[in-house]
Length: 274
Image 1 (cartoon, rainbow, N blue to C red):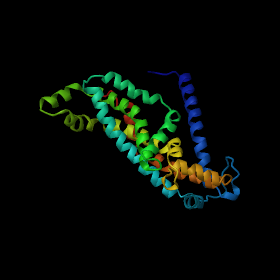
Image 2: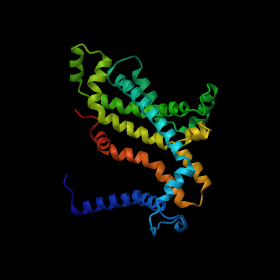
Image 3: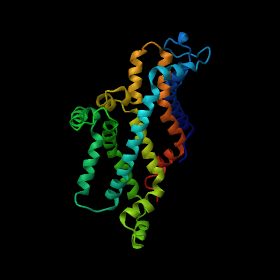
Image 4: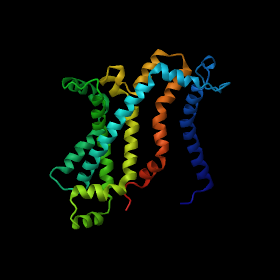
């Protein structure tokens, strides 16, 4: 499709505005993180010199090593559990015929419409009854359940778009359903699966409400929750707060940059590719 010069100018203008809206706050936080504390008054300003000591001070005072380790454990557990269950359920909903599959699929989709605020209090009492509060399981299991609605929907669409002829050829050769899934269907779907994993990892890493309600000890705090407590103790030390924010965001940003090519490929071509 060919665009006129006027349309191109409007498109680039809109994209520039959205780009600046997203980038200016991030640049401001990074500049604030490297500004010496005596010069930082909370506004957007260029520092007279780069002070990387803010990161060391934030790391030492904020216990971010422990918080990042907790976030890594929870995120890895949620991604692995969600991926395995979503692949199995997505293949079942897409390729197997069983009683009530249509109704059951829409029940699973209903999970997408429930905000965490609606069930976090009953969830807390249920987990306390079985003795799981203030554990990593209390963070991994509910977060995986919360992510399954989207993940199953994502994988079902991927597997429905997979060529039927290849699946039938594998079955004629004697492969059972599980073998067809793991040996035939999953390998060509890796881009879509990795896109789903990255989205689930980002949501899990940034989750704040569930850790706030379900854990009480400092050893089980995740990075966003630890940053909130760190902010309460250093309200006016903007350089230290910004450095803490950069430390918490850096792992997930690095993961996105490392997997950017596969992420975009999965978003654009992973579903419906024949």
